[in-house]
Length: 124
Image (cartoon, rainbow, N blue to C red; front, side):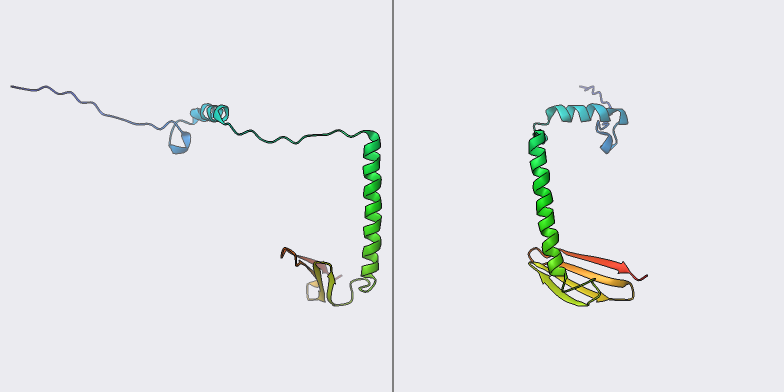
């Protein structure tokens, strides 16, 4: 009794170009994935304002800006032109001013969230 068997070589080539597949498959894979994507990007709802609403918003912004400039200038009168070294507190902001070899250094720390900013004004 004799048996006859046939065999062939299996080969695998990936489709995805990220895993060694043909680079021409990229566009097909991307369009296929995009069409299957159920998540949609949120679009910003644009509300057009009338000219009167825009004017009112602009006027409101200018008034608030003028008030904040006035309050800031009152607070900064104690500092002058930032030549006085020291630590100053404005609400939740701690401002530290000192002179260094780099120039005038102004460290600003927001104590409410821990964010810190440093401004260096170089020496002339």
